[in-house]
Structures are given as C-alpha cells and as structure tokens.
Length: 297
Image 1 (spheres, rainbow, N blue to C red):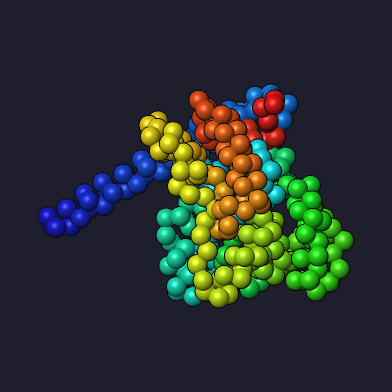
Image 2: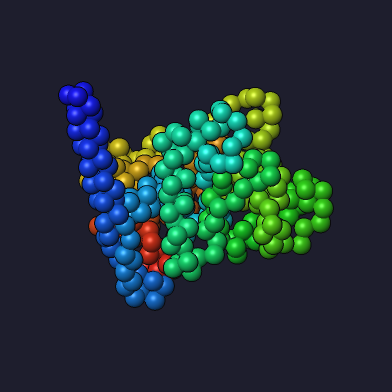
C-alpha cells in the first residue's frame, strides 16, 4: 500500500511539474518590430514560439550570413538541416535529433505560423526529390541573382546543357523544384557563384574537390577577425557570433583580385551588420529586417 501511495505521489509531482512547464511555455509575450515604413508593429505570441524563433534567427543571421543578403551584396544565403520526417533511415533520423537540426526544424515550423505577417517572398524553405528529409532555407535577392547568372551565363549554359535566358528563368523553374539541388543540379561551381564566392574561387574549389586536394580559405585569421574582434569583450554570445562568424567564409585564392574585392565588400557589410544590430534586441531587429525595414544610408 505504501509503495502504491509513493508511486501516486511521484506521479502527481511529475504531472504538476509538466503542467507548470507547459503553462509557462504557453504564456504570452510580445515582440516589437518596425515595418518597411518604419512603423512599429507588435507581435503577441507564446514564450515557446519566441524562444524557437530566436534560436532559428540566431542560426541564420548571427552564425550564418543571411544578413549579408538583406544588408549587403550577397545574391543568396543558404542553410540546411535534417528533418525527422519523412523517415528515410535510422541514420538520418538520429541526425535530425541533434541540437542544430532540432533548433532549425522547430524554429522553421514556428516561423511558418507567422511568416504571413512579413512581406518577404524570397525567404523560403525547399526540399528535393533526391533528399526529401534535407531542408534548405534560402534568402535570395532576385536582382542580384539575375545579375550574377547573366555575368556568368556561359558557365550556367555549359554545365546545365541548355540555353539560359537569364537568372529569372532559373527562379521560375525553382517554383516547382529545388533551386540548389535540381535547377542548379547540385553543381558546386554554380552554387558557389550564386552564393557570392566568386567565379574563379568556385571553379577552383570544384577542381580541387574532384582531385581531393585541400584548398585554403580566402581569409586569414587576422583579416577575418581583426585585432579589435579578437580582443573585444562581448555582452552576449549573439554579439560575439555576429562579429566573428556571420561574415561569409569560403575557399579560394586569398590574394587574387577577385578574392580581395569580395573580402573588401564583405568586411564593409560586416560593419553595416554590426552597426545595425548594436544596442538592439536581436530578434526584434531581425524581424524588422524581414518586415522590410532598412536604416537610411
């Protein structure tokens, strides 16, 4: 009898803890952001959703370079994660349970609940028939994408074995399939070009990869971080990531004219990104970008 009573007490405590946690997660909170006209908007949402959105946006905008497409010249930013469904095999399913993949999966599912409030059509997720559980998240600037395709049109036609009118044609084709894996056929050089890594660097990366020869990064430790970044004290991990990890990093010839021009451009954008986020709530500032808000130049 005592054993049964003890089990009942334990069960009751667990139930109360779970109920309290669930109640806390569903409690409402608010986010304030600016729309394209600079007008303040308020989003009311559960704390759980806010936490998941923050996790997603930190991965994309602080630890990756999505801000460089919105605030800079990068044609496309691309991140991917492993989703648990559709089930492919136990290996990919277990991989989907890793922290990064869980953060991205839950974050994107949460974003889908609110994306209708943000007039940004070119921030989307896609899958390919070949990799159904691998989800790609893309942020693209159509005009810059078109420009980089036009500039390297022969490369795209030679690789894809067909006539390419312009970059807009490829984007139209991507309405029904994966841009990166199917329209561009997963070709590393073409993907590198549209990601803003430079034509020479992208083809060199492909050549070295096929020969299994390592290719160094275009950045060295000091020109990527700089003495100020290395010695600075950061008020948060997000500020640290924005300063040290958000800037695009890629393989190539560090001293070529192409790489030097790209590095100069990305370092200028990096400063613009840091200035934009300085002193702001990170999630609210990111939602403002997604709502179309931009600081005046």
